[in-house]
Length: 370
Image (cartoon, rainbow, N blue to C red; front, side, top):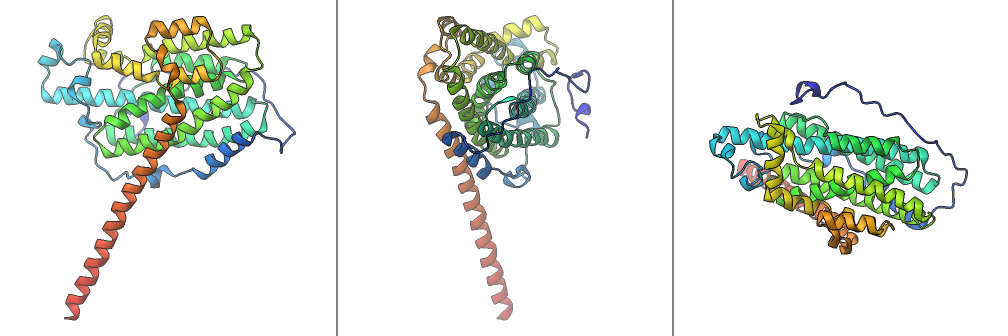
């Protein structure tokens, strides 16, 4: 079924055209890369996988409870609206929230694919071009997987959120070659990783857990790439140039924080926008979610050398300043381990099932012989 038939609201024109800015850069040195970045490139090649095969698409998903989300996670929980809803209406609300979350993941992954391709085009260093090419393939795979999940399992798609679209546009219109790194690898990818992780660690449903665990295994490499490249480059910039990038980060963080309210969902249930915004802001679950969402961004921004007073104050105002001391390396290692453990558990179960089938066949054959 065409995606346009599944949208909850009119997404507008079928194509969003963002004028390209900046130069395509060719380099003629092919054998002088940074060892750590070339090692990451090798890992990117080694870790390629097929979303059609690695994920068990035969798993059933109830679209009205796709994630096993607790009632307390619904922004309407505890309000008069919730009290008036029937069980079927609450199931529809869960479907809309799951669709909204995974739709933003889908649109973000398309944006990541385009930004990675832009990095291949514009970055001056060949080792970074090599790695970005593997990331472009990763992001294509992620968009494919999220699109399939929405089409086949949820049956509903939400248009891209205005704030996410705004940040993507700002990232792609900037002519400076490092901005797709900063906007996508640090801000959008960092925030997406935290969102993926929260759902991965709380969902009781095996299919979304698989999808998120495997996507996060890739994303851990992407954030590492952004950190390496930007840390090296930002050491060369003037204070004024660093402040420009900090302003971009501040604006982007506010946009992304405001993106996460899911007001569009409540509007689709007949709640006026102003009231929907108030309900979302009062949600204790949303407030916790917001704080966790910056757990990947703040330490990464600090690590790459953007830590001026104005940026620090913005993080104080958001209540996330202390996250600057978190260990990104530990978080990324955990993402890798969770995906590998999930693979090991799944393959062990499949192997036991195969052994049992063989044993049954042998036993049945022996019965015939008798």
